Length: 196
Image (cartoon, rainbow, N blue to C red):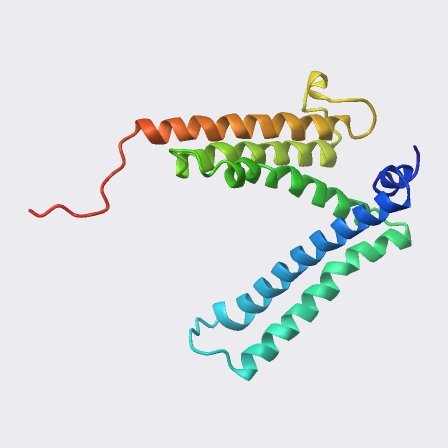
């Protein structure tokens, strides 16, 4: 298709699909930004000072200042896209890699209702995705071909990324299910102390 795939693909389905995809992306971005700003404000204004009382005006001001700082610092690398630097592209690549890592949470959120879902299933689903993210980061940073070609799905620039993500979701899901089985086999320790 040529051009930016995030724009070209929805546009090929017409203006309605393009608007729907834009709305989804904006909603997702706003949700992420809201969480980031709230966490930043709480960390700087309350957590570092270990104050657990009712928030004061000084804490609100501190939190707001921290949000402004993170907004400015967070957007500076993106402006470099317009200056011809590779920094902005690296930031976009980093969000792709973080998405690869976070996909290990999918089975954790979707399959939590299964019997035996617990810490074994969490770790069995989460850590393989972190490993895949690190591998993808090393491939991009060092120009290496770590993931074997048979794992690629499709052709083109993103075949490796798509393959890692689809295979990774499958591995994380299987890991989650194995973790559920381990949790059912290993007896749970009682949380209630038995009288002596």
